[in-house]
Length: 83
Image (cartoon, rainbow, N blue to C red):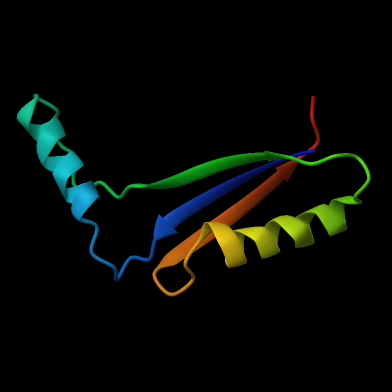
């Protein structure tokens, strides 16, 4: 199985890096971009010893406890079987 974890700043948290990216893309000619928010993306491979439910629980716990700061960040977990 493979898990994808997306970590983003909560909407109420200022994102200076996103603002800098927004300014940079406007400067080089991209138009119509209203806002940019930056985040983090993780791919985690999970061995077959865990059931899908156990894998999701482990990945959710890892995202909450290690990869994201739940005070200022949200996260989303997607879990797929390897193709």
